[in-house]
Image 1 (cartoon, rainbow, N blue to C red):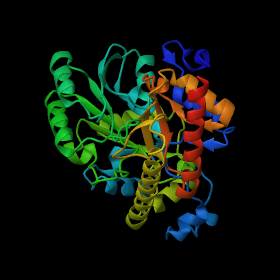
Image 2 (image 1 turned 90 degrees about the horizontal axis):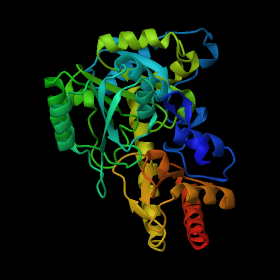
Image 3 (image 1 turned 30 degrees about the horizontal axis):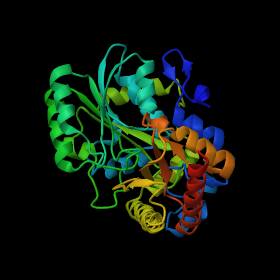
Length: 386
């Protein structure tokens, strides 16, 4: 398995460990705790929440708008309090394509970039592929805060072209406060550095809502990547977006001619209605309720399993980052869980942090409670085996 997960796909392009791990196992696992979003909604559940989809049967199945429909981009703009204009937004095939377009439109061979670590690792792999000179800046336990002083020191010493941040952070579940974001943005703008924030978990803060980096810093030298897969529970729509400076968006649009060309007209139609203000409020509320209830469930269960798992409770996102105190080979642990117990979680090796695991906490609470107990019992059994 190590050879499969950590070899090169193309020259300088590493295998995307996390996605490959999940793709190989997620359709076969009986207990799926590897997902990082909340439980997906059905069409009928959307309609029960008041999303009007009655005209979808009359929709002509054309290509649609290559940047995304004006209505959809207008609603995305409203998520950012209209700080950024709809013309500075491009709709993509999920946030994965948004990340790809952002990297290819901004970074060239030899460019110095700072990368927030740990993170989802897609951007990290793409930056290696294009030949960027990567400076990783690591968050550290127990709080996993964004290390602002380290970022500021590297800005001063290395003059990077761009800074890539995942906030709310995947996999740690931490999110930065407005003061930290403001200080980082101020230095970046002063030094003509582009901030690129993966904000796909923005809106799933469990305490006070956070502002987007665009709302904090304004529309210049700042890029936000987000989408409907995680917080909104709609991964099957494959709707993401990039919001940023016009020159970057225009370049991303030209690159997109080589990738997906246009978002699905059906997905665009549904997304345009999902992002009506009242629906946004309901969907964010649903996500927070699911995750908050599951955290309470996990806290109660873990009282009896302190020997097998040490959690870092999230302030955002739909996953639990935790340490396995009895093994630093968490890929081996995850393989045993899958092979012998048909349970899938994500090993820390896919985030370059062996000894840790990421566990999805976005299932419907009834199923989550049963599955989390199965995971704890299985971890205990694997501990005895190893």
